[in-house]
Image 1 (spheres, rainbow, N blue to C red):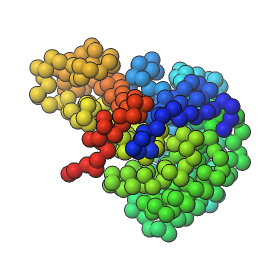
Image 2 (image 1 turned 90 degrees about the horizontal axis):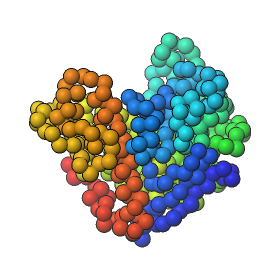
Image 3 (image 1 turned 30 degrees about the horizontal axis):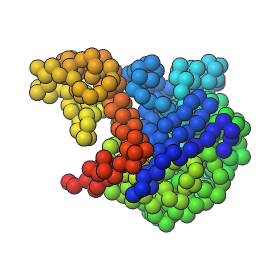
Image 4 (image 1 turned 120 degrees about the vertical axis):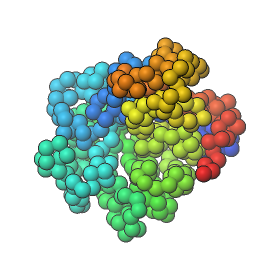
Length: 372
């Protein structure tokens, strides 16, 4: 790991693999475990970076593929890099564009060389190889960049998953050879679908490369939650203890708690802002409230009296209900502020519980399998 990056495990749970740590980056420290909001196009939807900072977020994710399409990495570089462009001065991570290999399956063709996309914006044909992905990310300038990978769908045949897993490793080697910047940490991604033996083999192979950090990818792509838990629990122990572990695309309470118990450190998900745009609030114990409901029209209490966010400290459920029912944009801003704060606070509480070795006691509810 470059001297600009370090990861320190401060405490470990005596009954699980959960750990509390510090991940040092050129733009600051990430206290783990920690939830990362998603800022796909160099913005977290509906809120400013000043508002984002007040949620307690420390690290933000942006999307390589979409930024390549609009405005283009050259413009971001002319603005001084991604941090300057969006005026977020904390740690940042860019994904590789690999998820679009999965999500844009009807618009792309995958070969050993790379991926050919047809832009959903204008139909333009775009070629992204491992080398191109790294070059784009080097130009964007985030602290952590991700290797280009192939994310197999669920369900998929074992043959298809094996091919994607092998290709992901081969692409990683090309990413490593292309990566140029010492102020950016390149993370590898473990694939393998639902096949635990493939996951173990992939994780062990990646661990030998001594990368600055590692991600578990290819989950939350349609498989049931219990399979996600099995995959994470089986994969994490093969990743180096002294390096940060990132679970991609996961952000529910139970999934994060169980992943932390398996030894994962950071997460990202679009859940808080997506729910906000549908008029929904995340509240403690995992409840989701639809603020359109008539029960809130004359409820003059905060969403959560214990929440320190601007929304809860300033406005009532009745006001939020009014904004949502009126389709006011401010509703989405206020709910996004609260929802992000809530998920960040959840991971902060896990961190404190690990530091005091009370993780399994305080989070017992989330560590059990969900009963339908």
